[in-house]
Length: 570
Image 1 (tube, one colour):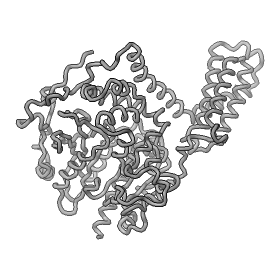
Image 2 (cartoon, rainbow, N blue to C red):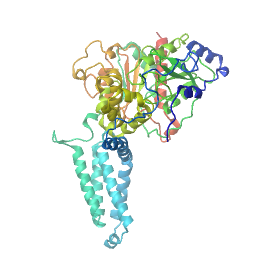
Image 3 (spheres, rainbow, N blue to C red):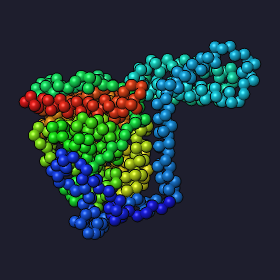
Image 4 (cartoon, rainbow, N blue to C red):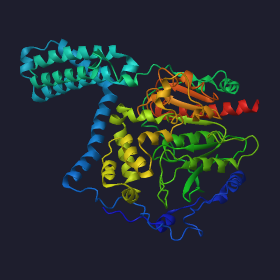
């Protein structure tokens, strides 16, 4: 199927600005103060003519594959694009269901072993019965090895549970294999034993380790803050314990969220590009006495992300107005020039915050950015340099994310612009990137002129200007970013986050331990760390799909209200 060429004319023709005539007077007043157009600036009467800039390739997918110079380049690129994701999906499902597969397999093998099977029964067993038992033996033992060696399971249950499960399953599966003469299964189990030894034995130290030692978290869950900061202490007093008590539960993949109808306006940026602001108004109209929220979505996300819509529904139901900034070039947003989205650009969010600031009335405030009144970062991390060595995420979760980012964003939307700026070898690396760090190195770093991945991650991190070696020293050098934090910043993070390692927000020892980190500088940093919750998750109860992202979004709301109450008390 050949995609039709993207054109500004087709894009403008597809735009459907909101009808403001039905809005309450208060919402119209807010929009007038915001003073932004409902029509994209590239589409109005003052749109740049022509839209395309000479020398800048047109928007759209990659059309030329001249970086593939041989047959083997094609084969390797196709394999690199698909194989890591397939392997990751298979391993991921095994790891996710190991806690169920291992005990179920143990039960079945125990039943098979004690029910008194005669030699005649084992000789007359059908081929499907033997195959089923063989699969049960191998899958159960493999699942117990996961429980025995996987970092998150070891953190949750300890190594004894997985180790005991492995020993019992090995004994039972050997018994079943001997009775049913499953010789190939015996060979498979021997290989699995060698794999288990390889995973737990450290040849450098000669010791047994369970799970990734670098990801072994000794930080206690809870709220960390500077008790010597009078305002922060007052804030915590106003913050209900029930709204910050960490919760865990099942994954949130099946959360049910209603679609929210936003009002979109267009925000001109400093370099002539345009971002979008999707505004969620409460039913009764904009309320100047309520908090005004500015939301920044995640990678390749937008206002339609489930957790964003959930937050919007909850806060508008309380009378607040919620504004979601769609980052430049993401979603359906066009870009005229070279400067597409990357994670280290914060000037666009600053522009949005300043524009919203001019709409505030009386005691109203915006709980978000340092140019504003308060901020909440959820599952984001403070030092993303540690993400470059989060090997578990690189192997299990990031291949699918990297494939989506590459195919939908870098290659699918800006393919010819990347091709124009990157060398052939860099294009090959981009097309073959197996995880997000590799994609960042071959796309964001090479395209935008960062020195290397460490430079890119440093620029996007609140702690990025601190040399890693200073974390083990007695104190920080002066004038670091974190030391000049001028507003309350709450970081909400789950210690079991499978995508963003806990090491991006804290360490077991040294200056990055939460107790020490929150005392740095002005003391305006708060860390709310939970033992479980995953990445942008924290589902509640067995019927988690009914609660959706309630805990996460209500924690942000209640923190905002606590800031408000504390300020009003002076």
